[in-house]
Image (cartoon, rainbow, N blue to C red; front, side):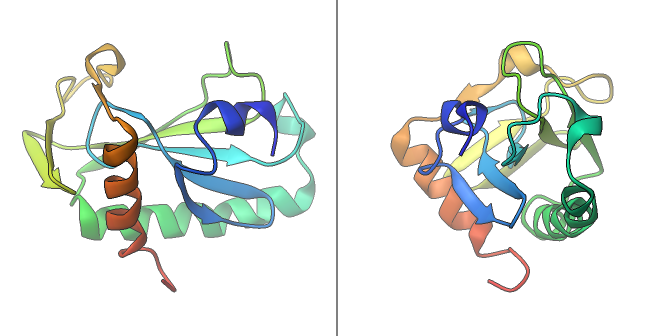
Length: 144
């Protein structure tokens, strides 16, 4: 795994491991169910990913949206590619909703709704919180 994936807490945050991508629980939750979708390659530019990674991206996105629709009931979903600090290709996946959502023992409001996500107001998860959210979301994952 590349350094970006490790920085986002792999393997403790892992929800799903694909051939070219991993889906991780985002330790800072601006909305409930926030994830990181990270390419396993060493690429630091989106255009540098292999064709196979682009093809598999469609499967990963379908799985993410299927699972989060069931778990969170999001109204919109934001994929943010913010590779300023963590250089390897990755997206922050932020499910968006009006009000609050509850799951895995947490209740989190979407403080930025209906505008941009309020990343600075994220609820930080400890190790137990990460494990709880990961286990909860895995139960909604297609093929789980």
